[in-house]
Image 1 (cartoon, rainbow, N blue to C red):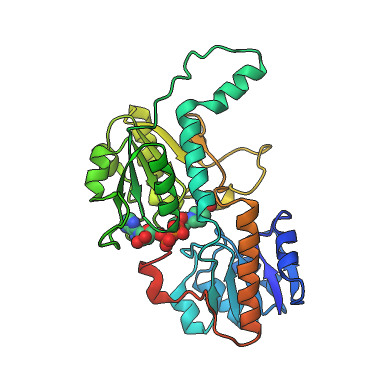
Image 2 (cartoon, rainbow, N blue to C red):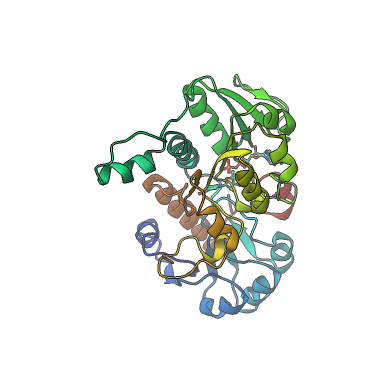
Amino acid sequence: MKIAFFSAKSYEQPFFEQANEGLGHEFKFIDCHLERSTVEFAQDCQAVCVFVNDDLSRCTLLKLKEQGVKLIALRCAGYNNVDLDSAAELGLDVVRVPSYSPDAVAEHAIALILTLNRKTHKAYNRTREANFSIDGLMGFDLKGKTVGIFGLGQIGHSFAERMAAFGCKILVHDPYLNEITHDYDLVTSCEIFKQADIISLHCPLTPETHHMIDSKAIQAMKPGVMLINTSRGAVVDTKSVIQGLKTGHIGYFALDVYEEEADYFFEDLSNTVVCDDSLARLMTFPNVLITGHQAFFTQEAMEQIAQTTMNSVEDSAQGRKLANQVTAPLRTVVV
Ligand code: NAI
């Protein structure tokens, strides 16, 4: 099969080339996003391999179909950027990588918590200039704190296990779970807002979770709460979060994902002006930490992403059943 990789980065290519050894599929790496106007780059390709910020809405899918594409391989877990109903109607197969390294994302969420809390990023900058003052660097003990988790899926589980090891009390909100086997409390979202010192989001982006963290939710949170988002940007309403930061109701905010990240994340824009005012405002807060969608980015996760994707491509080429196929009815359960 000839596969067009959109949003391709040089650091990904060796992993896919290795996973392709012995299979012999042909690759075309394209650095721009897939959208309606860039479909032509996939000329002569039977598959497209896409990432989180590619746009697979109906008009893109129609053009892909016209050009003879049969398979859409997402090299990520979330598929909120694909119109699955249209893909099904057009007979386009959609596959994803449902699990690569949940631990990678969970560990990154914890890195964000520890950095925001103990301010190691500030200490690093200070000590490089021989400033050994600890004034303003005071944190808090994690032991004994209450951590509220939205979504106890693969990442949520890994995160919960690790936070429990710090001695935290774990509260979980997940409407699709009836019971939990672990020593965690399954509670309503209101209960999390009321009790949690730290809230970490690990649910998918669905119509139900879109702007789930809005001004009403923020008002219900404990003053000084720490909010961590490694799920999808639009799960939080950024403007409400900015307001919460300005009033001090939100004490700390870390984000690895941003609602309007498509034009910014994964790119070096250090010589350009950030025109997104919300992103620019977030960058000014001393208690906000931003990473550019790197939570998944470990050696192990990259190997797994490439291997699973190439297995799906090979299954499609051989006409076999697609183990990681995504179909429309699943959307409300897992994204
Ligand atoms: P998963 O499908 O294993 O777990 C998601 C959990 O969220 C499920 O238990 C589901 O029941 C629950 N959920 C659904 N709707 C909910 C709601 N309204 N409130 C609370 N919980 C709800 O997914 P996994 O692998 O744990 O990934 C979670 C999300 O993390 C993905 O959907 C993706 O958006 C994001 N992600 C981010 C990455 C990054 O690099 N920042 C990398 C990989 C995933």
